[in-house]
Image 1 (cartoon, helix red, strand yellow):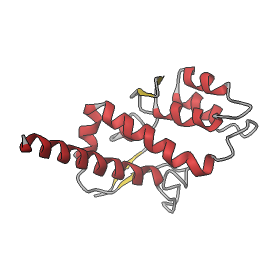
Image 2: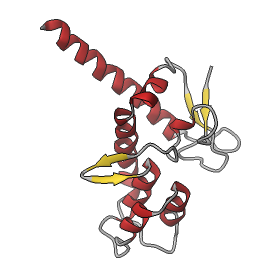
Image 3: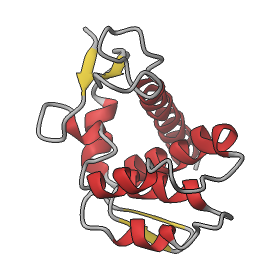
Image 4: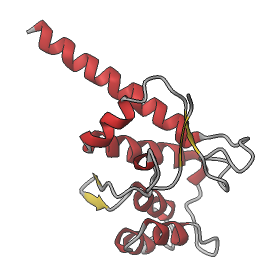
Amino acid sequence: MTIYFYKVEEPYGCFSNFSPHPIQIDGWYWQTVEHYYQAHKFVGTTDEALIRTIKNVSTPMEAALLGRDRTRNHRPDWEQVKQQIMWRGVLTKFLTHPDIQEILLNTGEEVIVEDSPRDYYWGCGKDQTGENHLGKMLMNVRQHIRQHLAQANCKLVDR
């Protein structure tokens, strides 16, 4: 059974980048993965001051709106680095919060789909033809954590 998620208040809402699960990366505290991801669009640009603004806005929606502002200068390598940045944020979120890590691991081998009606890159889009990169990333995070846990268990047994 495919697992669909989108809104924070719905089942599996913790998979959303808007979920209220803070992360800390490189000494910076981020309220949500969305804050982290959107802010990184401006690293090394003339709009770099937006990073702190995005970091400090009170909601992930505000962070998203600022990050999606096409009148601002996004970093020129954004298309090349956005998946790596998302991976770091999503992996950190699930390593930091054992409660949602358990939810992710309990999905077994099910396909995970971000059921966004508007996003055809990170989600499946309105007609389900999107690329679902966030869903795929969550499945990869799930596998990564399982491998990490298996290696940790092997080390304990070897002692």
